[in-house]
Every structure is written in C-alpha cells, then in structure tokens.
Image 1 (cartoon, rainbow, N blue to C red):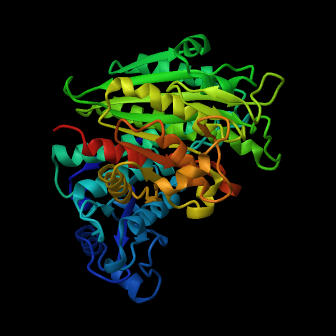
Image 2: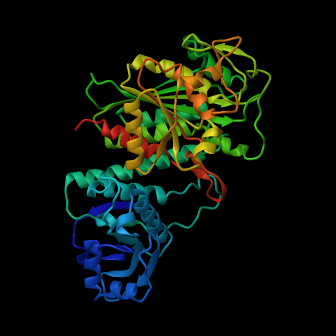
Image 3: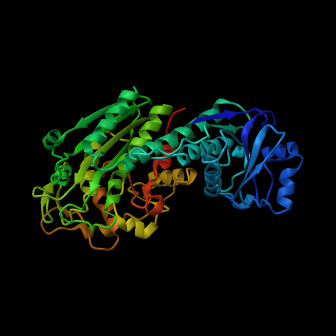
Length: 497
C-alpha cells in the first residue's frame, strides 16, 4: 500500500474516490466547500434532502461522472463542539472501513483540515496528519499467515492525503503516524502468532532480526545459564515447567546525546500462560498466547524508533518465558531469591508475570535510567476495574504518571491512574519470605503493582497493566497494538530537536 501527502488543489487531483468530511453541525472544512463548488452544490443538495446527515462515523458513497473523481465518499464528522480526538479517530476508522474493500484503487482523503476540539495537540494540522497516517496503517491490517487460502488482494493500493500546505513538519508528522501504525501492526503480528511458533527463543530471534535490519538497534540475548549465573531465579522459576527455556532480551537504541540517560521499556513476555501448577480453566485459554502483549508492545515501539530515528536513547528489556505445568515446574509454596536478593514465596504460579518482571526491573538499574516504564498483561482485576477501554497506570512518580496520561490522551490510547499507596503493601506480607507474590482478592491490580514497586525504588518508574487493552476477544479476536501509540507519543515528547 502506498501512502503519500499532496498539497495540490483537490479539483486538479484525479482519483477513483474523493473522500470528504461533513460536519453534522458546524463549519464546513475548506476542502468540503471546494468539493461542493466543483460538484455544483451536490453535497449541499444531498444534505438538504436527508441523503447524508454528517452524523459522526457515517459514510455514504455517491457515483460521479465528468469529474476528476469516479465517486465521492462522504464521511460524517459529527458536531464541531463534540469532535474530540476520539470522535475524530472514529470517523477516520469508518473512512478506512468504507474504502478498504471497495472498488477504488486510488483514494484522495481530505479530512486533515477537519477541526478537532478538546486537545490542543490534536487541533494542529501536524497532529491530525499523524492520526490519519496511523489509522490508515492499523485499519488496513490483516493477519493471514496461517490460512491455506489467502483472501483476494484489495483493489485499493494508493491513498493520497491532502495537506493545506507542504513542509517538513507536516511530512514528518504524517510519516510518524504511518510508522506508529506499522509499529502497532508489528506488535499485532507478534501477538497473533500461535504459541507453538512464538516461544522465548523465537522472540529473541525477532529481536536479533530487528538489529540486523536496523543498524541503530543493538540486541543482546541472555540464555538460562547466563541468567542463572546472574541470579535471575524468578524468571527461571517461571520457565522451569516448560521445554522452551526462558530468555532475557535487551535492545538498545542510542539516537540521543551519549550523556543523556535512557528511557527504559520493560515488557512481560510470557509466550503462553497455562497458569502453571495453578492451572487456568480451559475455556478461553487459547488467548493466553497474548500474555506476551507487553513484550510485543516494546517491539513495536522499538521498530518505530528504528524507522524514524529520533534524538533519544531508549533501552528495551524483555523477560520471556513460557508458563507450563510439569514435574519440574515451580509449586505454590516455593520460595525463590530474586536478582535483588529479596525472597518471594510463590503462593500462586499463575501470578507469574510479576515474577519475570521483578528480575528485569532489578537488571535495568545498570542503565541509570531517566525513567522506567514496564507494560504487562498482568491482572484480570484490571479488566474488572477499567474494562477494555483504558490501560491501568500506577507509578512511584507523579510527573512521570502525568506525562504518560497526557500522551495517552493525545494518542487516543488512554490510561487511567490507580493508587499505589503504602496501605496496600501489607497484603503481600509472608510468614516465610520477604514477600508473597499475591495478596487477597481485593485490589488485585494495585497489589501486583505494589509487588513490582519493591524492585523499582531507585528510579522513576511506571507500570502499565494492559490486560484489558492488549487484545480483543470474540468475533474481532486479535492483538490490538496497544499501548504502542501511547509509548511513541511519550518517547517523542522526550526526543531532542
């Protein structure tokens, strides 16, 4: 698929389909007015007759003759006063949905001049182009690698997006959006890959390939013997029940000043989670291939960095293991010594994500980080609390938390902060070790983060619980690519100019 920007007048640009935005109530964008003038008032007539309403995310295709365009696609963009970034993106999603399996080969999209309210950042032309680019890439995604019959190729092969002016800032914003969409799709590819293929060593191979494809990425992989020598006993404990050995994967992107402290991303990489000896119910267990969603998001963010090459230093660490039950698996009641020297009583082997993350969080101290952000499909409790709309956010630093929340709002990849008060720490008290790996049934997301916080005291740290946002169930089952947009927005806000 070819995507590009055009600053030419729409009346002098030929396309199979012209896509315009129509408000339900409010001021028409300049591009819509120009199209209506060229069409002799057709759009006004259709609206007056009730054939099109402008209601947000509605679409209507109209055949044309004797025009530079074979058809007109009208996308409703709602009321000006209600067009938030989320509503605007909903219209963009509808736009792509109407185009992707249609008859058009070349589409001319004009929604970059549709006004957006509610967020200063998205009200700019650059931000809208960023969101358009990302939406085009992510909404045209398919995953058919393991189907014996491939679907018929789409006719749509080129999309021109109109910009009110030319310039590097607009082009960079659009290209960053496209790169973010591709990063999301990389994340989705990894998540959707079946667990008999996607195991810890396979993930390590993907990291090595990323470094091979991009000179700006450096990758190092530690095997189980090296981790044992370092003292990463909790990662090893989780992987003991599987024939697939665990891996610690480290990727470095050094695009900033060598003296600048790196931003560090840590991803949970449980490539399949049976629950171990604390076995999960069978129903829906196939979706536990998505338990490496945190690591997949780290991969997606690193690919965006490799493509766009911002001036920033970023280190990515992935703790990868497969949680299986066999005679060698760790048991409820086992006590292990973490890399930090603290001991953990494992009361539930299905609370394994925090076990692999705690050693990784101790390991990253060596990089003297500016901040550490871990992401993990960690707790079902987060889905109960926030559903599938928002990522759970907990942090030991208010400034970092606020930056991540703001990035999520700008990227329409929202997070919601939960408390990390000391009051909850007592739920992890153990009679036999320094701590236990679970509390009681209450505040499960918070107590999981409390556990992690004990290994992140020496730097600014935030935890993203993506259990409700990393994938979708049901008819639309598949990895979502979240929270790559949030991560990219946050990292770019820290990149040098």
